[in-house]
Length: 514
Image (tube, rainbow, N blue to C red; front, side, top):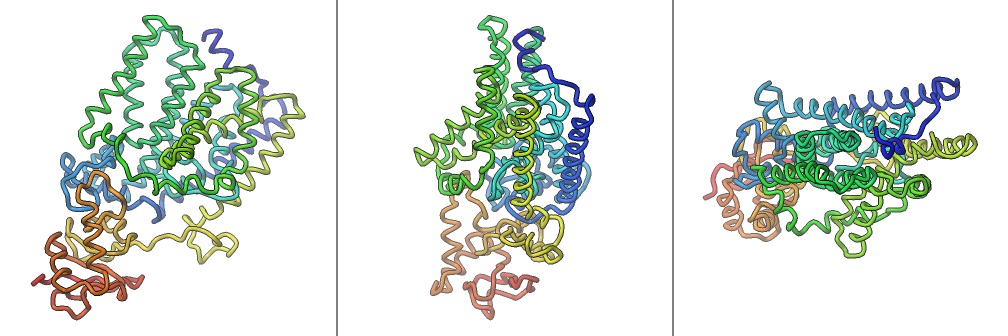
């Protein structure tokens, strides 16, 4: 290890040498183990909320056709950014094992959890030798938020991970921390080979292709690691870093399932992401003041501290998004939050004198307790809401009612027409297609027409001939709707009632469009 590298790892006392520190370490490990048990239970249940349907549909399409899966949501031979290295791996796993799609996603959740826990540990160990730092940093990532929980892919809060453990974003986040740790170790070893750096470039490409926004977040983290490493501008160093960059870019360009660089020009993302800029104060109540203090202390010690640079790049991007109305840049908020949360954990363990650390520890414990209470609704992803106290379930996120029952008599690839967005998200998870995608799809050229046709079919007063034309145009086999939703009346000769679901939705089979 070079002298510059050693400055990033301040000497710390051995916590096992004092009873209080030993108790702290034991408590932190116990808390993280408890959260891990809860996460395993959540993996077993796979809560029906958010993007579960589209990820299940992606695995389902790859299981049936690995090379030309087509659009995951609608019957169209288009590319999709959901077909990433991780989901293709899951598709291969599904074909090889014969496991059901949701069992495959449970395995994905277990891998994502393991990658996240070990990745945080490896990266934090590049910053400090303190054995309590990794579990405390993980607790801060999960709980140090605010009074208002958030569920969004790529965010490491307890609520988000409770819903997203099986998603590619969790895999990419865990892989991202491993990437930063490996990059740090490579930079500290002058003899690291060009091939090893090329491997780092490939790793960066995999996590970026698997979840694009998380790739940006950890690109900022990698920039922080590079700035902190003070790499000399010598030919060998330039060659190694160039090999990493060129390898990564080449893999991004060569990925066959979608064009990564076309994503840079995609529009229409702003309104979807506008909520990320609302209620920022309540979302990140404790991260901002505590993180700012912890990062300021690290900056005073080293102006090129990797966490400070990482956070600064993320903050500049988020602020630019707010000023320019580019709300999609809010997806880089984890680049502000994660380094700040890790910095707080390190500050409590290492900064200042014993009194400062004790006071900071008390404040952090209180903030983490508030974070637990604010994100208490995560329990409802494991235990049915009707078995929990009202104080736990109040203002929570009710789980969706899946519509797998509607596929009982349907064949794989049958097209459904539904005006219910949640049904449109869940049906493809079981092998069906929908006329309009449940999520915006910017690779689908006729998306607007599909949405308009769906709305037209269910709109009051639409002539029967136009409704029949919609059914014919998309080869609709089934119509799923609520009784009062509109569309062709129940007694129309083109429809046959095939069943009613537990949530009141009615399934009609299209018997003829004439």
